[in-house]
Length: 389
Image (cartoon, rainbow, N blue to C red):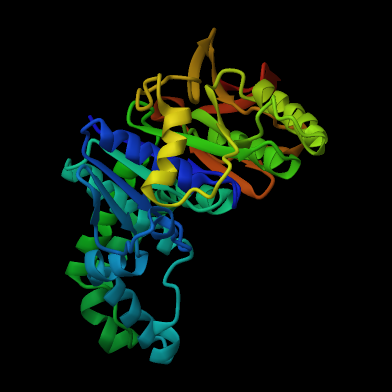
C-alpha cells in the first residue's frame, strides 16, 4: 500500500525543505518516490536546484518530482465539464473574454490539484507520495474543499441532473441557453465519484498523514496550534511535528542567550500541545541548504534512526459511541477555546463552526432521527450527545 505524506506550515518555516528531505530519504532506500507541489508559488525547483514543471521529471534514480498546474489538469482531464459551464455562461450573455478570465468555481484550482494526487495514487507507480502544500490557511482550504463540494453535490446534484435531462432538448428553443450535454453529465458524475474516493483517501490514516513544520517563534507557534486543531476538526491525521532551525544548546556566544531562552520557551509549549505526537527538531545549519547535498543534511540529522514512513496511529478520529439509549459523537479539538465554537444542526447534519472555518458532519443513516441533546468538552474532546426524539 502506498503512503501519502502531506507537509504544511506557516510560510517561511522550511516545509518544502523538510518534504524534500523525506523524498530523498525514501528514494535512497530504493523506494519509488514522487514529490509534488500543490503550492501555486512552486519552489521545488529552487530546493533541488533544477527545473521542475507540470510534467513529472526525474530527480534521482528513484525520485521523481512534479509541480502541479491545476489549470492544465482541468483543461485536459475535465474539458467536457469546463466546456459545458462556459457554454452556459456564454448563453447568459456574459462576454467571452469575461468568461475565459472567470474562475469557474471558487476553490476549483485547488480541487484539481488533489484530484491529480488521487489519479497518481490509483496508478500505483509510486510507493511514497510526498506533497509539499501551500501555507497553512491555503492548505486547510484545499483539504476541506472535497468534503464541502461533495456535500453540496450530494444534496443538490440528483435534482439538477433530472432537470438537465428534461430541459436539455428544449433549452435552446425555449430558454435560449445551453445546458450540459451527456458527455458533460458523465464528467460531473465522475467528479462526484472522485470526490468520494478523495475524501476516503485523505482521511485514511493508514495511507495519508499530515506532517506540520514549525519554528520556535511566537507567531509560528500560535498558527501551528490553530492548524493542529483545524486538522482534527476536519478529521485529518497529524502524525508528526518538525521544529525547524533550532539553535544548539551549547552555543558559546552571549549574543544568543536570549534567543536560546525564547526557543526553549516555545519548544516547551509545542511539546505540551503535541504531547501524543512525535516531535523532531531540525538544527539551524551554518550554511544555506541548496540542492540535494544541502537537503541531505536535514535527512542525516533528523530522519535517520526511526521508521519515517510507518503509519502511526496517534489520535482516533471522530467516532460514535453508544451510551445507554443515546449516542455520543467524539471529536478531538486540541487548544480550542469553547467560547470560539458555534454548533447547531439541520435535519441530517451537525454543523460546527470555529472562527472562519465551518464543517458539516452528515449523520449516519442509522442516526438520522437523533437530535443533539447536549455537548461538553472533556480532555480536549468535544462530546456531542445525540438522543432519539
